[in-house]
Image (cartoon, rainbow, N blue to C red; front, side, top):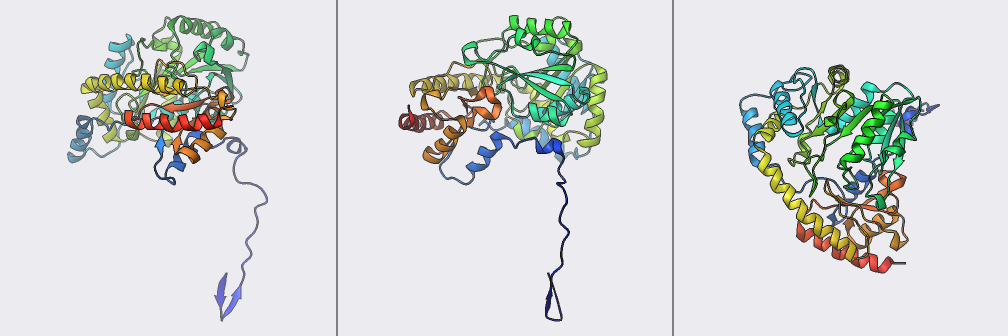
Length: 403
């Protein structure tokens, strides 16, 4: 409306004849994790077991390296591939840990977190309508990123009685002429499961037999307990058909720095870099400098955090079982994935009522696909006093809602 000579004049605006949002994006829901994360801010006294983030601050020597870099004026763009010094350090790191050799100049790409690396990998390799097979429950971004890349997401259910480990035979049964890749995430978010090496070898054989790529998201590779992590690309014949994804967020408590990486054959890395250069351009230089310091001198920090998480894991699992939520002991990451079936509530109902009645945040298992229904995800990267208080509140809640 405008006022002209004291007369109010209405200006009619044309109505949209159709939605301006693409059909592809209309199909994609908002993250089930972020919904509960946003609710925390509006409720006092909340204890969050929801968001998968270390409660540690980034070790100071890592922060200090970034501060020093800024003081020296290192605030400019880097190569689209990332700082060469970081790629060289990462190359040495992967060789020392897993016996993998990657050319820092052509086979490594630094990204803005592993989430970007996943998006780049899918967009770089998928043609419209090609399929990606992934175990479920799966991280919330896997299906949406596949769809945004023009692909089709094909889930393979896994079950608590099998430790949420995928079976190679179940992957094989879903392969057809449109299948392009297998997407794995072990240690797993949300279940904390670790795929044993024998089954990995079987999955690798399926990939070779059907000429498939494997995208292996190993962001939790350092967070394993009483087992040894097997890097998928290190299996015989897998380096040349694996896109290895990793990063610094979880092991080094650097979630907000947004530094991830992809390691793969040069032609795939080049394709990923092309998308990266036209969208993100490069990861922030200060964060890359911090990542260099993490690789150089962060090992003792990682070991200290892993030992602490291991202790918290035992407290969490025992506490959940004691209050009647059956939970097997996770071998990796920092999540427990207990069953809530004794309550008769859906996972969304459980999470919403628990937040309202006891001010504890957990993530509904259904946020990770239909296979997650009947479970909730509890992150144990919280202090022991907070965890114990959360378990006490959850115990009261479960007692009230037990069938």
